[in-house]
Image (cartoon, rainbow over all chains, first blue to last red; front, top):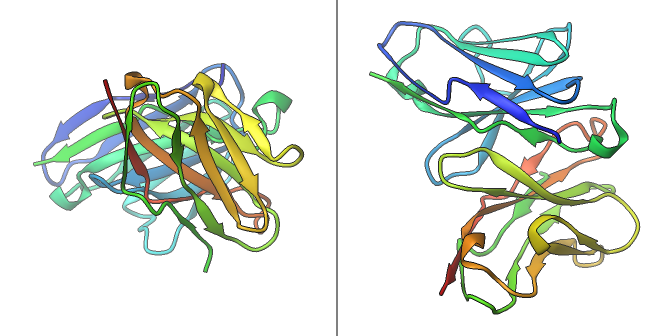
Length: 119
Length: 115
């Protein structure tokens, strides 16, 4: 149980283009979804928190116009990296949390990650 | 400032021996405590959590963790390590401020289990 998927698992794009990453909770309704960024050999950095149907809350220093987050349903959140540049290359990981199932509550379940490379 | 410390970058253990991966935290109130494991080029897998109750919590794959409030520690343990346990382990805490809605991660500890 508590499966979270991400698509694509890896993407290579040209500088200046936009890339969309999808995060889905497969067997539960995710009331809250989180987006993280992980640099090589480093820990996870929280980028933003999104609740279904409302605007995302971005962490300090994260450009909301560059990293667009949409949490359109209880099972889907998307992160769009707009006008990507090489410095945006990273491993992006989403997680989902729910208050709807007692056995899954209070825990974030993570997707497998998306490796973005911007040329 | 709230923080999580994993003092060891790497832990080396022989297969069959017990292992401990250390974690201490500096968070006000009574946070929730978590351990996650990450395999190469993969997301994080949930291992176990402590919210309240018994200080020793058992999780997936034979792992357990001991909560020590006075030492603000939450060390991960396993009685007998397997080579397949080799991975990157993250300790994380969820502070009560904000409704336990965020995770603060430690830097991670790489566990290497040798045959």
